[in-house]
Length: 366
Ligand code: ATP
Image 1 (cartoon, helix red, strand yellow):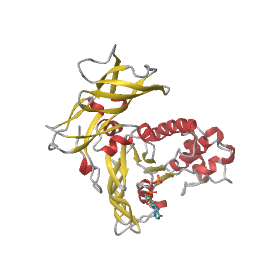
Image 2 (spheres, protein in one colour):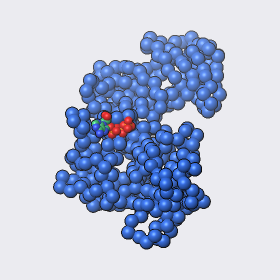
Image 3 (spheres, helix red, strand yellow):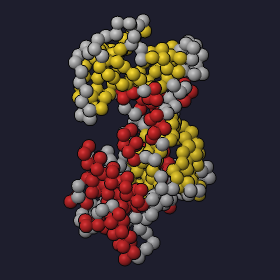
Image 4 (cartoon, helix red, strand yellow):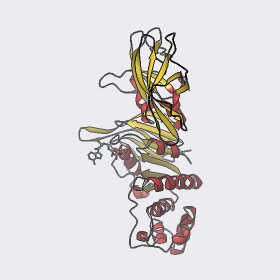
């Protein structure tokens, strides 16, 4: 069943359109991440789903029931949504268990406490039930906030940048715990984040937004391996960008020709190549027959991978500077010649966008 459905949401602040005809669903037990750069409308959409921002256009449904449309607006407290924000906003004068019990209306004191303890158990915070928030670490406070939102068994959890208040190391641990807690609770969840790695870590599906619109909505692997436009391809980490022009349904690059099916000759395109798509093997010497090769201009160990700066030369084709990422320590000397191969599943060709054109309109798979 579909837990949350937003349909054709449009929302403007004065002349600024923050959300533009946006539709998406979150299925039961599913985690969907709203991902995108700052100001693309993620928080506004979440607030509309929660009922914290009055609906202007479109519809919001929870478990198939309309909670907001042109004629009705169910208030946030009656929507059965669990909210978790960046600042956990725990009540400082209430113990952990009382914080969690707070939102459990319409039950006896004993029932509220029992449900609060049960939820604290789920998030691994039962031993701290009697503690006060100021005595807890940031990660623990986040788990209490999660428990407080989960305790009333909401139809959907809405989380806005829930880990951004935590330092890097703690963030990794807490988001891992949160993933398990959300999955164990089985609650449909919509999580706002601007961090692509976090979205890939958390999400069953990602909705990648730009300027209030969805650029692509699907499983992380689809966005990574089958991006529908250059914005999507470039959002998940560093990517090499080359400019080229099509000829005979192809683009020629120093790494070989790439398919550009459906594009007329002379179309200006952008070629995007992930650094890990470049395979290198040492050569004794630069090829004498003028065939393509790469010359190493710098090599740096980044930890789990090595980053190689390359100058790729191939006959009369304009040479290009590219970055390659190789697993482990691979640190050839400066100017070393390398045989270069391309994993074409991680190289993409898109028509170059004109000024004001949307990404989707300029897309063509490579
Ligand atoms: P961030 O990650 O920076 O929070 P976001 O993707 O969540 O960004 P929103 O907070 O939804 O984006 O904002 C979308 C746009 O709407 C931004 O340009 C923002 O400045 C604007 N905006 C948001 N809330 C208001 C408001 N109450 N009044 C006026 N403009 C607003």
